[in-house]
Image (cartoon, rainbow, N blue to C red; front, side):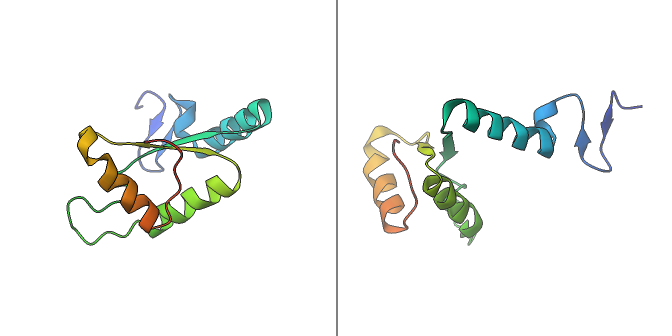
Length: 102
């Protein structure tokens, strides 16, 4: 027994939000309660290939675009210094990646 954690099936019962169905249910409940969701995502290695490994993050970017179309508020997190924000913003604009705040 692993304290209700089954690693073979990647099912975690100790934290209900690690369960895909519970996470979706929570999002739906939040949407119904507030009429919107806030989606916050990191910049480097989420939509930008900071380590230059050839990653494109196309699926993530398409998901973010879908979230925006559904009316979500998009927030970008970054640990880059403030003087890099223009670089971040230009990249987001050039690549059609939605955001409201950085």
